[in-house]
Image 1 (tube, rainbow, N blue to C red):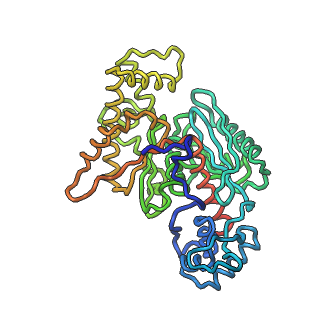
Image 2: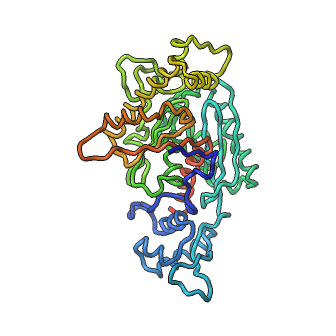
Image 3: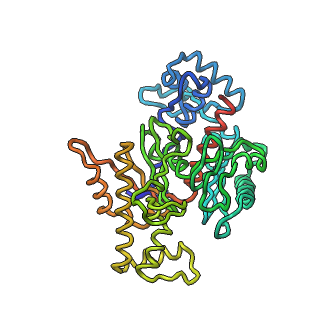
Length: 418
């Protein structure tokens, strides 16, 4: 099944609310008022008695805490629809919802082709967006900072929101990111490495900032807004200009012990193999990503750039494969086999309930042809266990920014209520 945010009728989005379902928190570490707020946001609108049941606390406690949050302007009362068994007369039941005007956050995606920003209110509603196209080639840290500043300014203007209402910003960066330290260890579109990008952005923007690997934020988008909301665990494998992975377990995003794990694109599948843009050899990305397929096309098809961009080259290669060119089809087939091996490794290592294949390159159906998925299933076949299902989500750029927005919402909630 292929889902795309260019066709809203196909997108599996919840009717209301955002955030993991159920809300999972360490009860000893997170204040009850924060868990109450998160329960309201996840439900969209919910009766006090249902909150008490979900949090295993007394209705009186919910009444007291909700009154405090209403007084702080974070939540508000709202009419609920009558449920089966409710009396038909009298005042409709009253519940709680997040007050939309309680603040905003911005999620940002940085890449080598398009930078996107999305403004969300504290209930997770989209208020505005902005997109800019950066210059080609590597950019300096200063150029990245200027681009993010411009995105914040343009997105707030498009949303009609004043700068003083901005509570937090989160940015997704391709490459290797140390989440806890706020460092970009390596990024394919940045000239410098080991950059303290989070702290630099705090100085430039003037509000709390979080940065993370962009594939992690795609997993957060599924966990907060998409088909992963009610799943205990799942993996998102993204194929764009590189290959990334986000892993959710027990309704939580996993980053590894040092904060920059799950780098499936840089797992080794061929000793002394093809050169990866990270500088090492034999990475999965070096056989599946755009630049890998274009490199193959140069050799097998003598396909010259002629001043064309890498994206144009990919489109030309895909068109030739669709027209029946055997060499072009073989390039995609080879990449598909390596992708099948990578997905099989994900299944073997993490045993996810579901794998989402996502990213712009899901338009190239050769990469997820039935032959590819059948090979993955064959490599992971075990007696008595079903095959791991795979869904295709061909999201556009704004879903990555929305995942960054989820990270910003989580951080803003913790600062305000934690």
